Image (tube, rainbow, N blue to C red; front, top):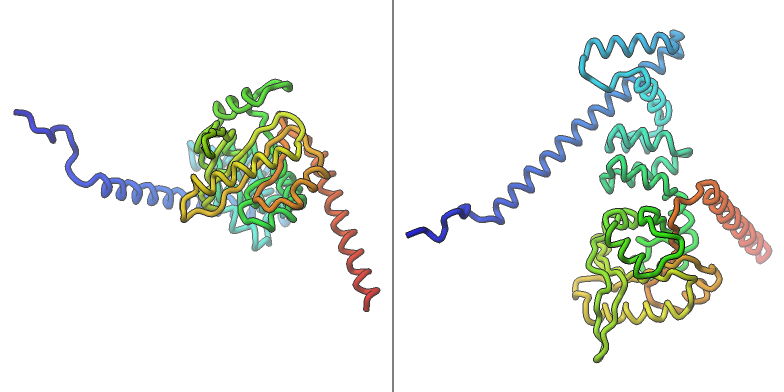
Length: 347
């Protein structure tokens, strides 16, 4: 007679899972420690080369000889090529004396440090991508895509334009006013159904565009109100904000009635789907075009936690985003000066 327990692993599977978690955490800690030491090594080499070029006149030929010496001493190492040695010097020069950013560079990989160093023009932009890479543990490909989509400029513009509405609900801070969906590879003229299918087929990249704190719950998510079934295009959950995030897809220009539909879905989610320990649901209308003034009018009297965002099916031109950001900053400065003058006149 065969035992019913034959083939089963004795013990408590939950306890096994706990040990697996401990092992995983330990490996991650070991990797971070090794990475910090590697970045510190590259920092010191960069400092050494900088001092030699300044005090001893080291040039390209000497640095190449130095690289050859290191490669001979540490055969098999790929990190001491002449090109990488010069990058270490640039790395040190970029962050030297910067007490705010120099600790951050040790928290991400050398490859990601190089991507940020080559792409970012200001300390503000460098800090943005350093923090983003550390928080989300981005791979090289993931970070490169965020940089290529000009996420820094997009986020600053979005924060400026959405600030009045985001103040109403903390959940809206996780959403922007524009998204780049070039990875969907859909034709310029497309239907909502085609777009939704492309999103499901490229879900990993879609979540990456929104942030790794988002978890997918379903497409055409059914909510029942009375005797009628309604289908919500996409439903996500944000783990940090502890709330449901409803996304409605509109391939045309935003219309005010779209907001009414989304508000209806949010009410249904909060009444029938949201758990008692979760925060109120938030919503996003993702459309191909929007008139800023129409959006402002539509949202001004709406108390629902919702935003309207545009999507693009191609990578944006960084120069256009920089110009728009500059215009918004100039406008903000002009308003501050005007408010200061009015305050002064009242004294």
